[in-house]
Length: 281
Image (cartoon, rainbow, N blue to C red; front, side, top):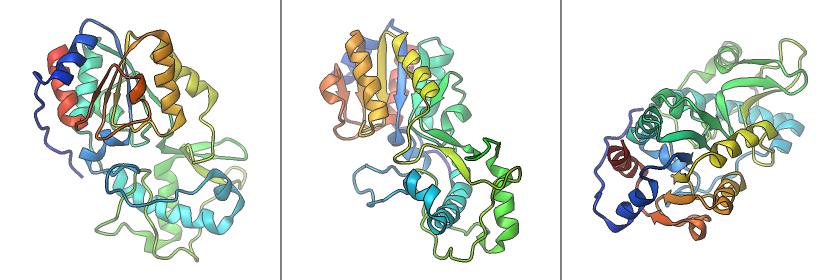
């Protein structure tokens, strides 16, 4: 999948001009969500027209072998397509702001790894990543590629189709999964789980603290592509607000953090972040 071509945003528009007033000359923490990656071909859960989804919860995954099998089939097929995505101009704009010393840290709710691919370095992946798999029994961590190879070796039918309907978490709905052999931990035989935070699972405390530190040391918070419907992101906005930091939100549609924002820009992240980066660097 290729990134969308960047569009242009009007720097003279009142909302963008006001955002630049608040951000210029200040250090910025960035918080990003699924809306940032839509221009890379990854759909989000909550955007306009998004299909209704019922993601598997952590409790379902650990307690029901048949549902775990179903998850791994969908997750594997989706991951193969998911891993082919590339950063778009919005990701690159944030990386350039970090290079310029303007963005001092970035917290993302996405698990796609596109910020790291774009060159951002000080990144906290709040909800984990798709690069690794961990045993829930002994803690052994292995690369996702290793588990993917085992899945395809044991289940040749899982060869990647030409077209896969990709979900925001790299999952797809499998057509058949009842007879699939799911890999277990080679060290202890325990349950393997991708290193992403499932619905109903808590974000690790150390990761939460790292995200809070990024927000605490910046003068302003720039939110891009998140509806802030998930509390882990909304809490960071509330934290910045309590500190008196300037808050700018860029998102298509309303967010749960709008009442805390100094400026809300109802527009696409690609064009808006590109324009902001151009003006701030």
